[in-house]
Amino acid sequence: MAMAIAPRLFVQTSPERHTSPSVAQVVDVLVADGAQVRAGSSIMVLEARRAERTVIARKFGTVRLHVKRGDFVEVGTPLFDVK
Image 1 (cartoon, helix red, strand yellow):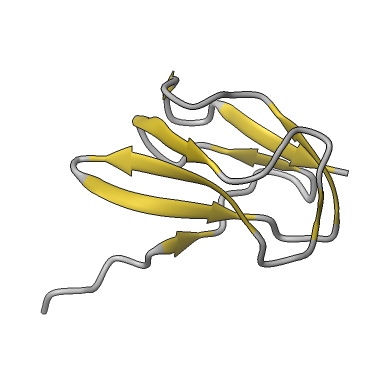
Image 2: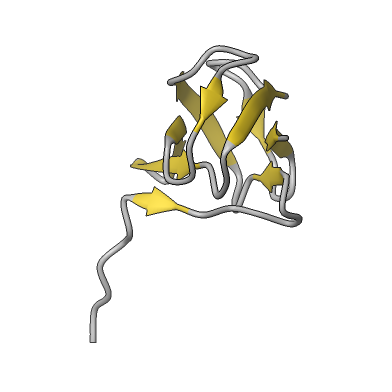
């Protein structure tokens, strides 16, 4: 049975830190560093194996970005924090 790939990902290792779920490239950053976001806000787009996935915030707060557009990331690489 084939499963559809979710277009939006919750990627989290703590309530604040969001990390990469796979080897990927950051193809777009949708918010500025220091921006206020709500839970469910789209933060960035990753591309892995020709599939784009949007990474979203899980809580309200201020975004601190750890990567920029064009960066290649490994599994577990910190992408951003929301505090």
